[in-house]
Length: 335
Ligand code: A2P
Image (tube, rainbow, N blue to C red; front, side, top):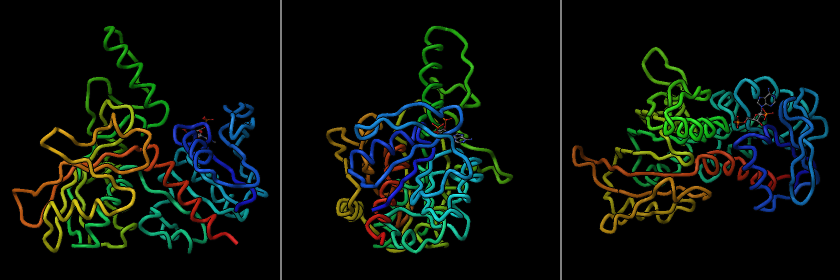
């Protein structure tokens, strides 16, 4: 059990769910401290029947803290988390800043728990669209070796933080009423639209979000040979990311074999009955920690390829749940 646990970014879209999960899952610690920006300092939050006051995040706020779970923008994680490591804290970070640094462990506990246990410094939690995809790829990779993945995402607005959800709600209302709305989380209107850009473009035409799916997948699965071709799209759904995943394996896998592999993997739920029009949809997956898979079928255009549809709550397994599972793993192994 950890003595003092600090939740950094406790007021954010993911931070709030981290608090909810720590409560729901009965995560034990001596003391909990909640940190956010100066804008939120002094706000009161109910946590486990207690009233906690949000403190301002500073570089010297980590004295006496044993474990930090952070979910903030990248620049905040870059600036403050080294101070937490220097103060001797175990640090779990949700941001994108540290994930691909060679000295940082990038962990999905169902896949590479040992990387978290061996980590000396920051332990990063992957990007939400990567996490659900690698959980689906893992059993296929173990059984038949994944060579190549073509993935298209349909990402919810909650992935852009609380302001993303606010933009969807306010923007939709304004569009229905024929009014203008000034979007702040998105560069284009998200209401009644689809935006094929998440993050900035690189020279090769891919976005930063897409490249996360390429490099994080290889790091988590420990296989630099896996080829990934991603397209990430923001859609007007408030929560849960959906993905179409096309996988080419070295050894052939039938859809029935893939289904069995998915069904025997903890954390994956297969919802797949085309005859009755049954498949996972974002509206039914919100609030769950599982990754839902349906529409499993052969790729009729190519040998050794399967295609399926995958939906998961991006704020839970895609972010908060994964971070809390890493915290639970560390707590189990803490001296
Ligand atoms: P605050 O609410 O005080 O701005 P979201 O992803 O929903 O936008 O949440 C981001 C989280 O990161 C919030 O808790 C936010 O706190 C926190 N945060 C953002 N910028 C900073 C900063 N400069 N210092 C500390 N916390 C920050």
